[in-house]
Image 1 (tube, rainbow, N blue to C red):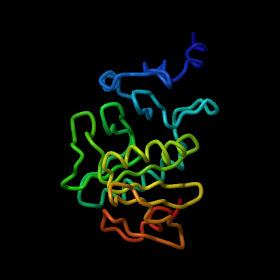
Image 2 (tube, one colour; image 1 turned 180 degrees about the vertical axis):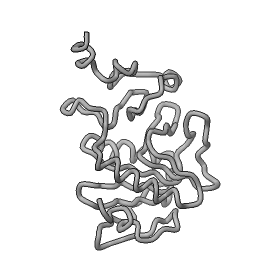
Image 3 (cartoon, rainbow, N blue to C red; image 1 turned 90 degrees about the horizontal axis):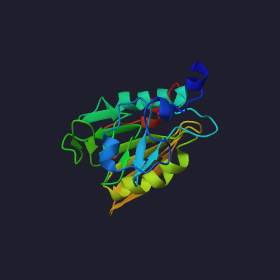
Image 4 (cartoon, rainbow, N blue to C red; image 1 turned 90 degrees about the vertical axis):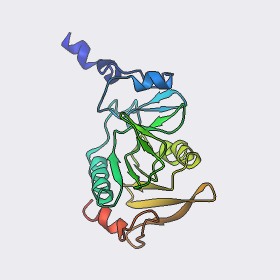
Length: 201
């Protein structure tokens, strides 16, 4: 019996749907609470950090350390900051769990009891092996189409940050920033963001 439990997929052990399962949005919202990152994209269940190679649903500790540092930095600003897992209901078929989000004091994103309704002003994704393509393509399109004012894609392995800002209904690349090119967020009153985030990573 113990051996069977050890070889049971994590989604079965947690009472969750399998990767790639189709699920109505309201059914997704009724799933049991879990620490495992899980998203619904066009009514398809996605586990961002899971891969068939690793068979683990969890991100690396280095990823979590950087996510925590971003959260702490943004929490010092006026407004509200959330760290994953928090559900962001982007539209009627998609619920995402960004690594970190920041809501302006007069945010367009409504804080519901179980989730955020609408995309916050600033969305941050920290790349990992299993999430890079989705963060740069699928989720980028969703954040852009649903009103994100600013989007950071943080590459921890290569130590740079792509910063996109909202212009003319699109997310436009403000720049790629590294240790030689620091930046100030258009949405926040913070300078030296790069050096603050990567100081000891």
